Length: 266
Ligand code: FES
Image 1: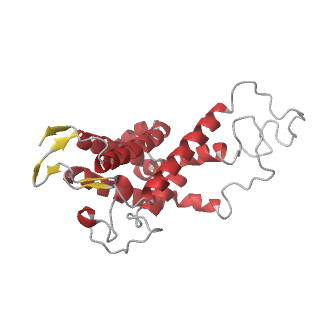
Image 2 (image 1 turned 135 degrees about the horizontal axis):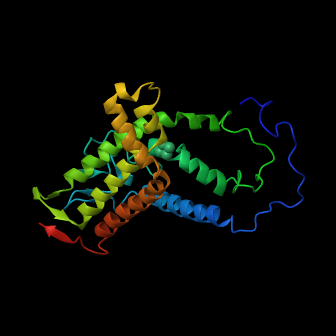
Image 3 (image 1 turned 90 degrees about the vertical axis):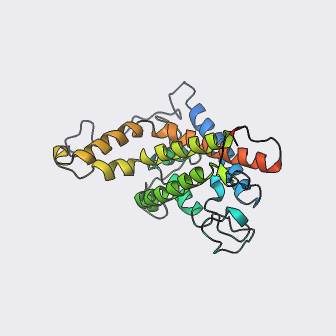
């Protein structure tokens, strides 16, 4: 429908003196989002630059915040060699963390969340924008939000690495072992896959640009599966923040000696 045909096109908004006519607690959702994301980012930043308590050698538990571990501080946690020097400002997973950050920052859900909670752009429906001007995602730096699909490809590779970490953690010394840490690592990796596959870009890759689903049954099935996951994308975005922090905290606690791993086998 063209602008000329749209009902009400060309008419100015009603002049309303009040900032918003909403009387419900519209500010609660952006406030909760702000507190939740700020807390998580603070925790993750502290942990990434702690350079310690990231690997339980006895059970091969490696926290996802340090995977793959690539600096010469990694010791036995270095499963892909140590091509990087250890340096305070360089995280052990320096080659993957920027892509994970990009993946989350450019995620359609997180964009909505932090535009509302941090930039007040706008904080809620029918509440005015906190900024005078809005140029959308058409200019630098927000035009880079369009790189999300490429961040998705990188996140897929990183999820494979996390899966490998969870698999080789079923070792206790040189034997098979299974403990609560394994359960936590596996749940985290399953949730990471669910979040990654529920991505809007993944859905488009699966079923986009097809004219006839009937001629592409495999892609149709995958698209149907991804579409179901996609309806839970927001929940998965938050669940994975929780499982990532829990996995990291559990491994840090084990390594420091706050508690021991509950072992079911070996
Ligand atoms: Fe959220 Fe792609 S849209 S990860």
